[in-house]
Structures are given as structure tokens and as C-alpha cells.
Length: 98
Image (cartoon, rainbow, N blue to C red; front, top):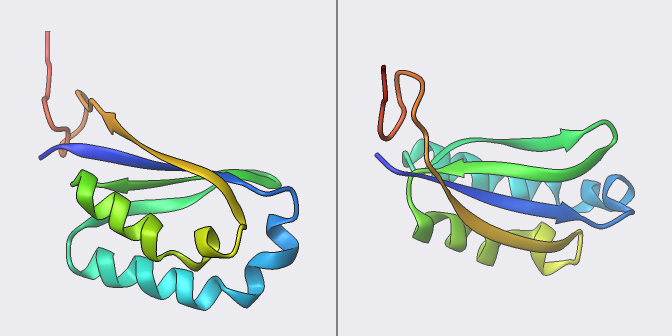
């Protein structure tokens, strides 16, 4: 299994604006999680400055961003998808024990 991170950079007013779109954003996330495409996701920082969402497929990460109301409504300033080479843990893509 490969891992891909969807990395969000939030707008400065993220906390004030997210409420109007949060239910739709979470519904999209849970739909993809229930389908086995999204593994984990959440905000980073206190207060939140960015978000990380872990997927097992690059296409799934890109589809999420394309359909996310946070992105469509400018709550996310920018986003990118990056491969994550996981090597430690039961579900790592390429476990290494030396």
C-alpha cells in the first residue's frame, strides 16, 4: 500500500469561515474513508494553520481536493499532494527493520 498526503494551507480566517462548509467537508471525508480511500485527516496547529489528510492513492487525494468545499470557497489558500514513504509501523508501505 502506498501513502499520499494532501497538504492544505489554511486562509487566516479559516476558523471563522469553516462552519458554513464543515458538514459537507466532513461528509466527503467520511464517504472516502468508508470507501477505504482516506485513512486519516485533520487540522494541524492550535489554532489550526494547515491540514493533513492521508490517502492510499494519489487520485483519491486529488479528487478530495477537487470536491472539497473548503477549497472551492477559499478557506484553503493552497494545496498539494505529496508521496509519503512510510517505513515504520504495521501499515507502512515499505517496512524496514534493521
